[in-house]
Every structure is written in C-alpha cells, then in structure tokens.
Image (cartoon, rainbow, N blue to C red; front, side, top):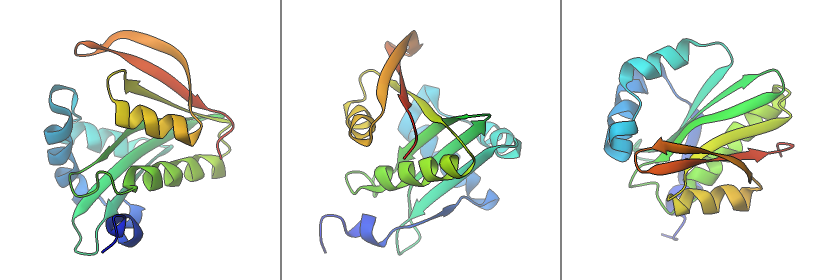
Length: 155
C-alpha cells in the first residue's frame, strides 16, 4: 500500500445523522475541553446553510469530518478533524476541498476559519491551500490565541 492509501481509497460523503454520536466521541478524544458535544452537533445539523462531510476508509472506519456553513457571501469552516487512521494521509485536504467546493456552489465569496496558533499541521494545510491570516482572537483556546484565516475567493 502506498503512503496515501487511505486518502486514495477514502470515500467522502455527507455525514448521516446516525454517525453523529461516533463523530462526537472522536471529537472529544481529539479536542478535549474544546470538543463539540453530541447535542451541539445535532443543533448545528438542524441549522439551515450547513453541511457535514465525513471521510471513511474502505473498511468504513471514520477518517475525518468537516462542518461548513454559509450565509450571504461568506462561508465558515466550523470544524474539521482527522482521526488517527486519517492523519498524514491527505484526508484533511480532501475534506477541506469538499467544503470549499460546497461553499463555492452556494455563492460564497470568501471562506473563513479559525485555528489554534500552536496547531502547526493545520496551519500548514491552510496556508498551502491559500488561506491567509487576517486577525487573532486572544486566548480563544485554552492557553492559545485563535488565528483567523480567510480564503478569498474560494477555489
């Protein structure tokens, strides 16, 4: 198998309601105190203008997910994460592309996100994708600022 075997074989599709508990459990394991709860995932899913995509391996293991929203000409990456099986496999890039494509179809003129200033893998991904820093939120995360980034126009 190549280094990108999971990426090459992973399916990305809209996240089903019956997958929300699995996603919330993984979110808690990945993000700890800043994780979204299952009830929050349900609330976001019920909002108009949102979409959730999941990546799964050929064995149906959850490799990652992204939640996007749009309003007017703006889109927001509300959350994105990869599980252990998806890390370093290009899954986050494919999920981000799916989200940006979804936003572009809905007329988004810019895509926004925020990221922990210490999350170097995510910062590298976003910068390589074309996102640029435009501001900060001091102490947004436990012990860290949030870097505010924008992709304009979405590709």
